[in-house]
Amino acid sequence: MLCEKPMEIPEIVAQVVLYLRRNTFVNCVRVSKGWRDMFLPYIWREVNVFKDYWNSPSPQDLYPHRHLVHSLSLNHGGLFELGTFVYPNLRSLKINDYQEYSPVETVSVDLAKTCPSLTHLKIVRYVVAETTWMTLSALPHIKSLDLSQVHVEAIDAPWFWKVCERLEFLHMRESSIEGIIPEDLVFNRLRQLYMWSNWVDEEVQMDLVYRSAMLESLKWELRDGHGPEASRLVHHPIQRNNWPNLQQLRIDLNFQDAELASFIRGAGNGQRIITEFDCGFSELGAQSFKTLSVHFNTLVQVDLGYCDTSLRSTIPDILCSSPNLKNLRVGNVFAKDIAERGPWVCQHLQSLMVCFRVGDSEQCLQLHQLIFERLSTLIHLKNLTTWIPDLNDLAEGTLEFRLEYGLGQLTNLQEFSTIEFLRLFGRGYEPQLGMEEVAWMAGNLKKLKEISGCLNSDEQMESQLATAIESLGIRYERMEN
Image (cartoon, rainbow, N blue to C red; front, side, top):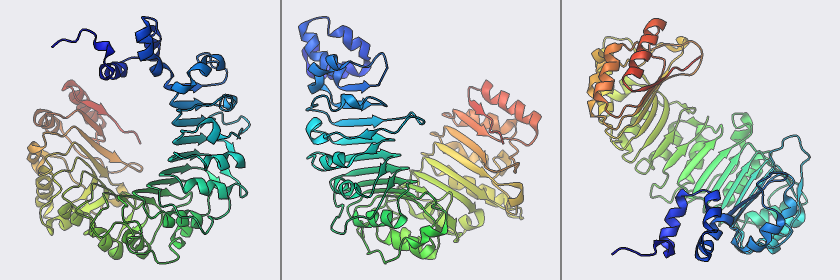
């Protein structure tokens, strides 16, 4: 049955507005009273108030529609709008000051009065007054706090931590907080904690992590996470399953093997719950690898690109034991170690960044064919990035993407779309792809859209390959040194 007045159905209007811009809404409200009632909320749902910007609404225009505002963004000089009147339905507030050389303003607003329904607050480059933290701690629905380049003085810190006690999401970037956390506070509501390059005492950060027992996601990077002071953070044993719900663990620190093992041991509830893992520059040795192996069945994303993996069997074991893995970023993987392990079980893998080392022994050809055979089982693989070693690191040669070495086994990869030959440092080894390889890829990998990086050490051949790739409708991007 056809609908005579589809624009009177709220569900249809909600779909239509997804494809309209704000100026179109303005025209729609002029059609009729009915259309005005339908489209006016979409005009005022998200409001940006930028000082001296011609398109910002004036206080006179904003006042009668303040009850429609759900998201409000204020920039440098726009704070006067915040305390002018009440926004009863405001959910998200962003206070942004991107003028690097302008005087830093102070946020001094009774948020509990002006924004009683506030759930999400983001502050960029402002000083927050003590009275603001006091009122913020009284907000009944506050869930999320995002700070960037914000300084909290010692006198304000107790109120700041009281606010954090009510949060589910806390993101701190390049911010500073003086003092320590009051002993009586715990952060059992906190589900996501992201800390990046903050001027906060390292042990205070560790204390915050330790007291947030219900964390589901932790992303943590110190300002000098690669320095020796990072290793002293685990100064007391972490209880097993201290974070029973932790699924995403990304710590860009410099933990030693035993310390990293202690941290991993605190994650999960004994039922292998970790799905994302990144240990930065830490040492993934025998102890930490053993604790991580408990989570192999649930791992979806693993990044070991920068960590110190003292065990050569680490990556082959992950490939053979992680059936749900979709994204893997690692360093060197030796073909001899792959040959000593069983078949890969990670058939859901979609993105792989790796440097396969095959050596130059008599078994070189067999090892090449073995790796291509294993790659051919990754039927959902879409993106492959191969690390290219530096000239000073060629004791074990890298995988050659040549037909005579087994490239033709990759016919099964019908989802394959991008391949990149990544050289990180200096003038290193370059693969020796030829026209036959390019033609085979274009003819057999039906969804291949992009080839990038270093293809051949001969500049003339490199140029010819680039022309051939683009003529086949595939994007090519040369990576410069």
